Image 1 (tube, rainbow, N blue to C red):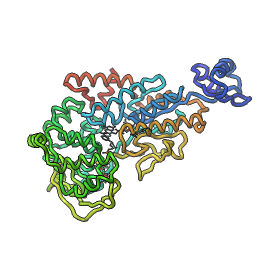
Image 2: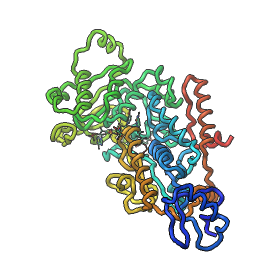
Image 3: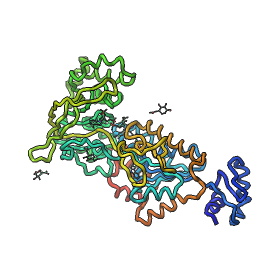
Image 4: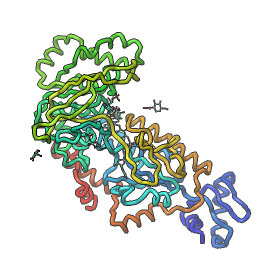
Length: 511
Ligand SMILES: Cc1cc2nc3c(=O)[nH]c(=O)nc-3n(C[C@H](O)[C@H](O)[C@H](O)COP(=O)(O)OP(=O)(O)OC[C@H]3O[C@@H](n4cnc5c(N)ncnc54)[C@H](O)[C@@H]3O)c2cc1C
Ligand SMILES: NC(=O)c1ccc[n+]([C@@H]2O[C@H](COP(=O)([O-])OP(=O)(O)OC[C@H]3O[C@@H](n4cnc5c(N)ncnc54)[C@H](OP(=O)(O)O)[C@@H]3O)[C@@H](O)[C@H]2O)c1
Ligand SMILES: *[C@@H]1O[C@H](CO)[C@@H](O)[C@H](O)[C@H]1NC(C)=O
Ligand SMILES: *[C@@H]1O[C@H](CO)[C@@H](O)[C@H](O)[C@H]1NC(C)=O
Ligand SMILES: *[C@@H]1O[C@H](CO)[C@@H](O)[C@H](O)[C@H]1NC(C)=O
């Protein structure tokens, strides 16, 4: 007996059209007639020639960050019977919303409510603690599902490619952020904050998150979900000065105005800029697009305006400073006499070629050394391939695609940072994930995607995982972890005290 008929009989899952010896009867029949035919035909399902050829579409999604959840949300909303399974490497969902977004930005994490609704949808399942590419291959997923959406993000760091990058005291922002946000793989980072000056390379919003966490009053941080070890390290921190270094000028900073304003208003701190860096910037204002213009105006005001009485008093009381340094590109991290610890950084001086947001930095040949004990490289994240069978553009570090359809790979889709590269806020990720879901639904409807065979979906994958000793974590398991974290947080006046190891997460999930 064809397996599709079996499914049709018991779960009404073949709902778009069926075929028989006499030919294919398309959707145009309408659901009412189809249902009657389905009932009428079921008793004869065994007879050859009568079979239903279109089954419940089963889609799996790899990664449970914003891209995974927004793709799932849109698929479930626009297609009435698609089933969506989400596989996530960690036992806990939400990707960078949990492990990237700064602890002092709790409002950004409200998207978790929407993601939770999606996870609890009757046609959606969450399988945590499943490392795709290792526990199960993309090929195996493609066999088990009609379509596979890859949305596993950008979990690596771009490398500066300079000598000394590997010294003690040098960290990628990815690891540093992962450490204060409790990513299990960064638990042992234990960064040394026993120095006066920290240099952050890069001037994007991640750089500002890191600067803010390094300089924020402990009274602010202790009311957030920052991890306890990070909080304790920050209490002992000797860092008094943070320099945020960019290879281009004030007009090219990558951060946005809200985040800059937070730095400007950060209690207990004052800014310290280099006036000469702003030569010509006032004159350039008039040619800038509006958001860039407002951002540049705030930078100018911060750097050049004579502070009023109130601001002067605020600055007088500040015990910590921060500042942008422009036209400087990392050239070498400098080591102590033993050759194993950072004591400073050599910056190559640059000048701009061209103007406006697209201007390029070129080296002048001059260098400048800055003394510091901590270097954090915040020059961007990077995606990695997880399965040799999936096309990957190694130069751009993304999956080559058109509107989310992976090139030369039918049934394979991508969304989020893996699709676009590691830029954009959650709303940008939402937009491009909706686009991918739209492409997938289009392909299901145009029959570019073959839905004629029954797919076993999670049934066969779960069996495979069990065979391999992988114990997946369900969404209700996650909810146990969630409630334990929240009650631990309540005890110490925090919204949440995150569990820091995969072992303990799983242990809590199993109780
Ligand atoms: C430090 C930082 C702070 C940010 N702050 C903000 C902010 O305040 N506001 C804002 O709007 N945007 C912010 N963003 C941007 C936002 O986080 C991204 O736009 C968004 O998270 C990208 O979503 P994604 O799903 O593509 O990737 P991710 O969020 O990284 O999700 C990928 C998921 O895939 C999982 N995964 C990885 N490998 C595998 C595998 N092999 N198998 C199974 N699962 C796997 C990961 O564990 C993760 O859960 C921030 C980004 C960073 C880096
Ligand atoms: N609060 C928020 O909304 C929030 C918080 C965090 C992150 N995010 C978003 O997440 C995305 C990623 O943030 P991000 O800060 O990692 O990336 P980003 O915004 O792309 O900034 C990267 C920075 O690194 C610099 N850089 C890149 N390569 C370099 C090199 N080889 N040498 C020196 N400098 C180099 C860039 O300078 P050039 O411009 O010269 O290349 C830029 O200043 C962004 O879209 C960001 O807005 C948002
Ligand atoms: C970033 O990743 C690369 C590997 O791609 C690694 O060699 C480098 O040391 C990492 N750290 C920093 C700070 O760039
Ligand atoms: C630093 O380097 C010296 C020799 O180069 C070595 O003996 C010493 O153990 C190193 N110290 C640390 C803390 O790694
Ligand atoms: C998302 O898409 C909508 C509609 O196309 C657009 O108005 C909005 O600006 C987009 N947002 C981002 C952050 O790209």
